[in-house]
Length: 160
Ligand code: GDP
Ligand code: MG
Image (spheres, rainbow, N blue to C red):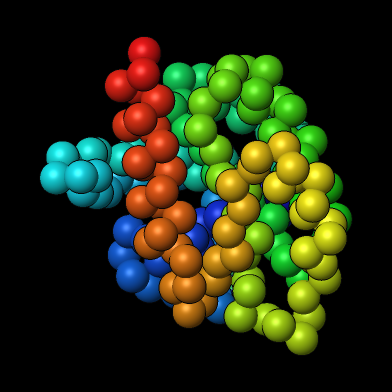
């Protein structure tokens, strides 16, 4: 996702249960780990926090390789970040093929500033995309997002 949509905050919320209003500058790539339970099996998630600004394009693609799944993160209070996420999805699909992904519209706690209407998402729903509205601040849907992606990655691996 784009700058400041909340990628690092979402990982921080999920892995450490913490949130900070401060902007946490991420240089290059940040890796975190967490074990989740999928139907009684422990799955070790290795989380790569990658940003999608153009100057990092080359870095991003090489780090992306081998991922079993991914989140696209947009900031629901800045509609342009949704457009950016759609561009990133094309790049991810080219590099990773058909692996599970979820679109996260983050900062859902900021209801008054919210810019993304449900009708903006119709096409995505029609294409079968998984879309969740999250908040790294309140924790809304964060655990569910990671659990759901882990579950889909396990199903995908079993199907192979
Ligand atoms: P990144 O550049 O995508 O990694 O974005 P960060 O995780 O560093 O977050 C950018 C800014 O948005 C920081 O000031 C965070 O505190 C804030 N932020 C991130 N997620 C949320 C959220 O869900 N709600 C609110 N209100 N602020 C958030
Ligand atoms: Mg970051």
